[in-house]
Image 1 (cartoon, one colour):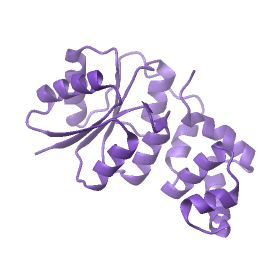
Image 2 (spheres, helix red, strand yellow; image 1 turned 120 degrees about the vertical axis):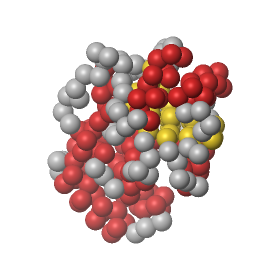
Image 3 (cartoon, rainbow, N blue to C red; image 1 turned 180 degrees about the vertical axis):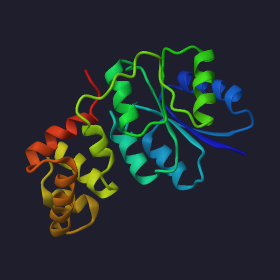
Image 4 (cartoon, rainbow, N blue to C red; image 1 turned 135 degrees about the vertical axis):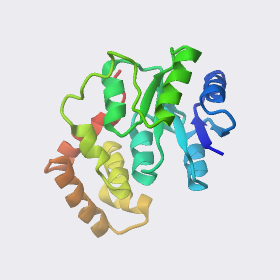
Length: 205
């Protein structure tokens, strides 16, 4: 039996996704959660066949949640669902490793079509909207290790090395070592340049 997680903080839209899954994945066990923390907790109990993830949750806004899940659970296909459905957002989601993108404006029929295609191993996005990413920074961020990604988020939040070290339960020397590897992957040389690169984790306004 397939096990699928639906992570969305809007009960009505969760219900719509569950209804679509009833057609696309009949008999699947579906876990519903309104938060990224709930999704990660369910993922830790794996195995999971599919995660449907809203880009805007109470504890995650933008692509941080998607990038973190892809880093920590690379074998789990992730479908992004979002009210932000412009070409740039869709392209970023796919660049960060999403297996598909379902706009919240989609009809039930379209949701079923998308979920069926994704479960068959296809990459699905709305036609004519998945424009190419502009500079490839999303792919470079997606290549970071889970620790490097957490450090990048810390830099984006303006936290010092010692604060990030405390958050991760490691030494400052370890943080500096991770920064060296992270800078190399991102193609940057300074913290400021890394923070600028990290803007790719935010949703367009």
